[in-house]
Image (cartoon, rainbow, N blue to C red):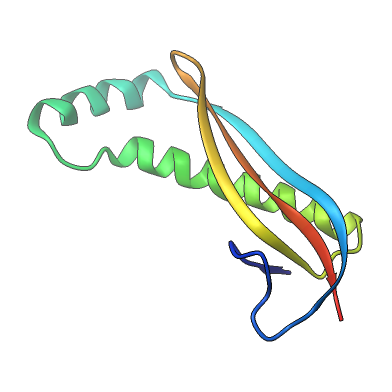
Length: 104
């Protein structure tokens, strides 16, 4: 599956726009990660526990979007974007969306 953030696929022509595809996941922080992250906030530096959590969430959202595009028969997804929002104090949603297309 070709995935681009642009409105076109370089070197390819779009035949048909199939419509919006998306994938999302909601992840909650683990209390142990919160404690370690709190300590990292004191001394500074990357909060690896949260970085890992969000990286996994992005991959899962991306996989879900790709599967939705495959079901529609897409060759590619254009104008792909990620969005993150807080659902609750300890949970975040990661959303991935774009337009599924058939290429010539």
